Each structure stands twice: as C-alpha cells, then as structure tokens.
Length: 321
Image 1 (spheres, rainbow, N blue to C red):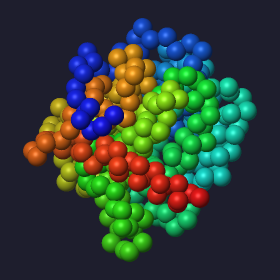
Image 2 (cartoon, helix red, strand yellow):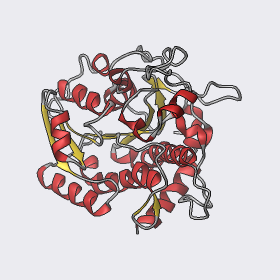
Image 3 (cartoon, helix red, strand yellow):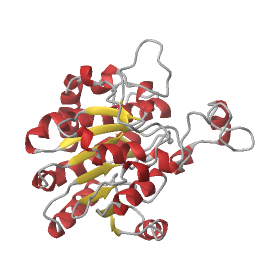
C-alpha cells in the first residue's frame, strides 16, 4: 500500500485502550508468536495479551534468567530462548532452533529496542541503535520467513515510534562514520528504518500471505529510558522534578498495558485483513503528518515511502552480506 492509504479506519478502540481489551473475544489457540523484548515494559504486556488469547509465545532474550523471572507471573504457553539482536550468529541460531520445533509462525512482534544510548559500535562497525533496532530484526525476520509463509496469513509488527520524526534515513552516513554522532538522530533514524521495513516486507511478501505493520506505541515510561538522565527527561517535559510523569505529559502518556495495545491490535485485528504496509498508532491507522501536526502523533511521508523502503532493503542486505 502507498502512503495515501494512511487514513483512519475508526477501529472502535482509542489511545487509552489496553492490550487485554484489544484481544477480548480473539481466539489465538493453535497460533504461534514470537515477541522480541517480551520481558520488559510493553513487551511483557504484549506477551500477556497474546498468551491470554491462547497463543503459544516464544520470547527471545539476551538474559534468559532475567526474562524468565520477569515473565514468572504471566500465565499461558510461554517459553524463553537465548538470542542477542546485536549478534547475527545468535539471531541465526535462534531462528534455526525455532524452525526445528515449529512448522509455522503466525505472529512476529519485533518489539525490542534501545533508545538514545551513547555511541557504540557492534558488528561490522555498525551504529548500535540502527544495528539493534533495525538490522537485528531484519535478519531475524528473514531467517523466519519460511515459517511465516507457512502460516498462510502471518503478521509481522515492527515497533517504530513518533521518534521517527527526528530523522529520515541518513543515506550518505547511516552509521555515523563521518563523525558528529547524535544519539537522538540515531534513534530517530532507526525508528524510520523500522517503519520502512514494514512497508518493504509487506510489499515483498503479501502475495505469500505475510502482512506487516509498523507501530507507534505511544509515550510510556519503561526501561527503554534507561540511558537517559533525569535532567534530560525533565527538560523534555516527560517528568517533573520528583520523577513522576509531568502534568503536561500525562494526557499523552500511556500505561504499559495501553502501550502494548496497538501492536496487539495490528497482530490480531480482523479489520486489518487484506491490509498491510501501514503505520499505526492508538489502535488505528495513523494519518500522514501535515505541516503543523503535534509531534506525538501522525507519520511522516518519508517513513512510509515505498521507494525508500526498497532502497533500505537493498542497503540492509548489503550490510549483512
């Protein structure tokens, strides 16, 4: 679908709907799901909702013990396996092991991510945020494609962010090798990459029944903010001096249960049958950003551009070749 398809469909849910409300009445019995980052923040709530609807959920994690502890109170068919998105050999091993035990994969929620971290290099001199948020998930999805195709109606959800508005893809210097690293520009670029990945995947795989969506979950206080100092979050207006969500941010911020809702909606909503390649927010399709849109909603045209999505696909394949 092209950017012109970014129009509200009036789903019946709102910005404050929870993941549990979204899956009420949905039967995922016999369906398999993978949720990266499913042991922290909105990831836990995503796992909880999918498992409550009957799905068998796998949570890949760098720290298996930590993940198991975080998910100990979540009921359902939930398993944890080792995987590090920053290590492509680890990603490939996880995918092989999963394929050896499963004939199909119905839902892939690429939820894990890092935000605004100090400049760090991994892999082939890759900038950490782009590598973890985009390249790792690109490689994981590619490795799982045979299982996704076998599901005959799989959905892939890429967690983007309104942070995509900070930066388009920096085509001439994606990995900041020319200097001038900016942690927020790097984050914004990685979130644009997540959105474009959904466009590209959907375009390439919709004929095989695999549909993809990108999601802005909303503003939520989670461990994603672990690299930010308190002063930064106060200056941004997110929290007050006491460390609580500020009065100005409260109308826009969500609980983790609300933050997980849009990804779960994209993964399960029957109203999205036959659709894909869309950027979603607040349990609905996001509208294209105009000149004076508030920064916490809508999607920039460059983040849903099919030509840019195809270019990013080629560039990423070249990076991991």
